[in-house]
Amino acid sequence: MSQVQRALVRCVINGKPRETMVDVRASLTDLLRNEYRLTSVKKGCEVGECGACTVLINGESFNSCIYLAVWAEGKEILTIEGLTGETGELSDVQRAFVEEGAIQCGFCTPGFLLAAHEIAESGKTYTDDELRKLLSGHLCRCTGYENILRAVRKVTVKPSRSSPLS
Image (tube, rainbow, N blue to C red; front, side, top):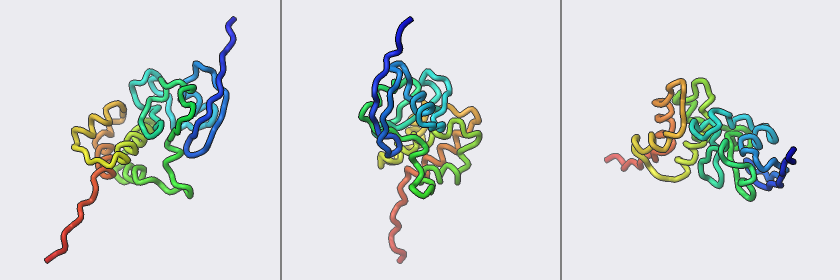
């Protein structure tokens, strides 16, 4: 019988420093769900295909199901629980999803929200085709793609400054 190898992982999760011993074979999904009860990180396909387990690591989207927990050492991890403000107010991205009805069953929503947050944080304006490509790693079984696209567009399109009326 082989002995389970464990390693100490120190990282920041949703703005809070964390430290825990993990099985070196454990995924980041398992660490976040089992150790920290961050259940917005969904277990979908568990092979990096559906996007339900998406988290932001140092500001970049990753499928946490195929990202080993030990790789999180020294990293900053953001889940949906970290998007809300200190007093529970929704982020701009979350508000846009609610306003556009882009939430349907909710299973894919956390992954889409984090991808949308990453897109919005880029400060760039994208075409619809570019947004579709950026969101293509996320599967919505309720076919809410158009509502999701409208919500993401809402937080990425910067309002134009209108000229004074003459």
